[in-house]
Length: 89
Ligand SMILES: [Zn+2]
Image 1: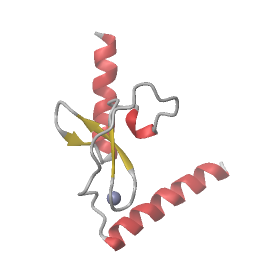
Image 2 (image 1 turned 120 degrees about the horizontal axis):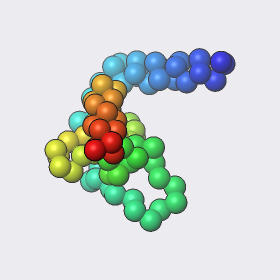
Image 3 (image 1 turned 30 degrees about the vertical axis):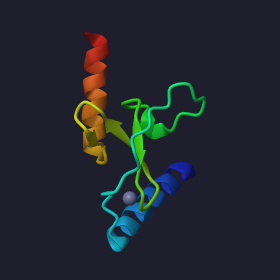
Image 4 (image 1 turned 60 degrees about the vertical axis):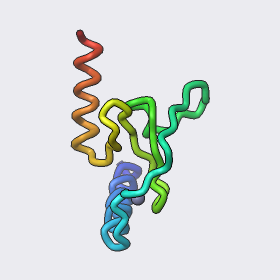
């Protein structure tokens, strides 16, 4: 219960900082596709590839096919839904 609240708070604070300091995640590192590493960044799970924001250091899933970075939660949900549909087919 308490941990969830802290999570929410930290997400909110990060969002606020992004707004305040203007990080729109416009500059990213080159996409990385860790295949054999044991520690897989959370961001890479969705597409298998991820990039890091050069300004704030956040990691985001990257889609090679679409050549785009998935930054918003709604885009993530779409990807999860698409993946689920692919697995079901
Ligand atoms: Zn950023």
